[in-house]
Length: 275
Image (tube, rainbow, N blue to C red; front, top):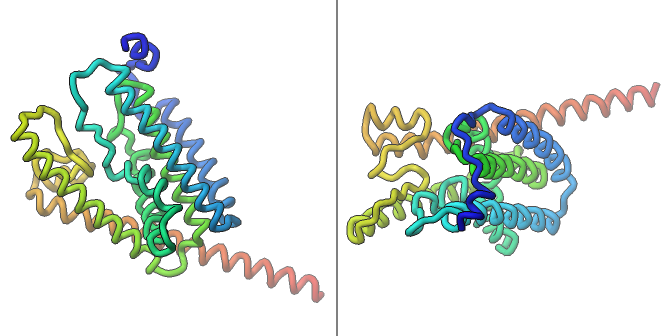
């Protein structure tokens, strides 16, 4: 195992955000997001299913590398529960693999979540990379690529599903968000009981909303310090829903603007032809 650790472990304490690696991944994310957004506008349902499943396989490979790195490449006595793959940004791994096989209604809920809430999760980490930064270069790259892929997938689905017309498009994703947040909170509470019973030493903080550990989420962690966990949790839930709403309104505004430009160009072309 030490041989594998020497191959995949590239520790660099001076590795920081907005360096060459971070900027390169951000640039690639922007390029692929534009390409996939345009591609999505001409995608059929069967193609959407294939693309979503393909992203699921991609996420699975990235997660597999991360789990192997911490549990196989490095010598450990037990499972590292702090990296259990059920964080907010880990959910696309499961949803992408399941969504193509769901009936229309179920798929609609998942695709809405991956579009609006998936974009928020990926974008926030690319803008504030400190939340995923590690001295291990390959692990940092894995996380940045993961979140960049979330943004690319969201842009593809926004184009493929033609989101930005009616606010009800956000509702299904919001319901999914509330459901998985509730699941994460239950998991946090239940695990803490097991931790006490079996004397486990590792932390378990899914979605970073556990009432037993101080949150590291930007701004919200300060709210917790100034108030209490209940206020923090309410701000967490409503803050993310508000951000998804703002994202929808932005998409809607861009959609309306593009339509007006197209209509204007079409009218100008007709005037020229008539002249």
